[in-house]
Length: 356
Image 1 (tube, helix red, strand yellow):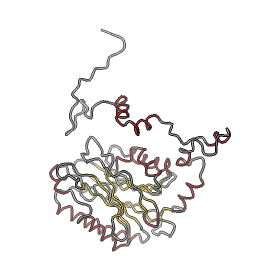
Image 2 (image 1 turned 90 degrees about the vertical axis):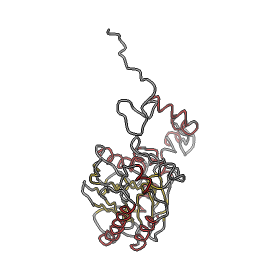
Image 3 (image 1 turned 45 degrees about the horizontal axis):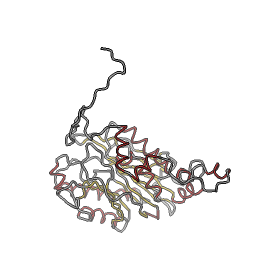
Image 4 (image 1 turned 30 degrees about the vertical axis):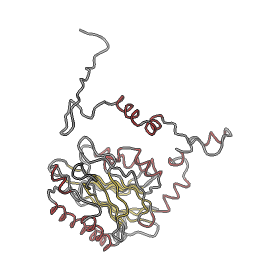
């Protein structure tokens, strides 16, 4: 079974640590390299304190911080592989642990003509990059990262556990969790650089998505204040039943550690019934279908108009979104730097009765 409170792990459990790194404020490549050295020392030191640790996860932006200056963002954008991933790989190899590290940003293929990607790397205990994930859903309107183009990825992780990675705001979209889970992910890793005021919502969504998708979730969030935002911490490890195994507070350099059972999640997915969402979604109403003599598989077809439209006619789906929200990326009542204000006039709402 999965458990919390010890420093060990077993052949059936993956020892996962989330490290709540304080958000750095950096400006140059030299500062980034020095900060990366600190992260490498944390990997080594944490392994001494947690001898069962198989995997350590650091928050979004933990390596480079947020470059609020556009030129600094381009000047510090890195290549993968490159010097930073080499450093992280060496630390993982020396300690015999896997690690998840944030690189904000990774140079675009057309660097410096286009904005970088917000990227994570999963490095194995031999120091090899085994997964690279680019953030699919940047936190607009603030984040200017080029949207990721690699999709979701599932990789065999420590001890054979199947691992996917998402980043921060990605986790607010149920679709990405379901995509990871349906592709086989047993652990979804969610590094964050999430700030107030959305603490309660972000703690809740990771727990809810673990429950809805029968996945373990490892959240590593930043802490501290970088001169612009205050980061709420609350890094956590969540069981596949949506219950929290361990959660930090708001402290800098906090950790949580839990042992995640490989056999436990596979047994639940194979044998649970009433709350087996991954099975029931694609075997819809199987009890009634079987009773009606129409087979023992339920209904496989997608019953949701929006998703069918999105796949077949994405522009039409975009129009559906705009019909219930707005037509422009800018909002005239609250302008955001770098986002154009709406060009068309917005009609004033009037009461259905003319009270002039």
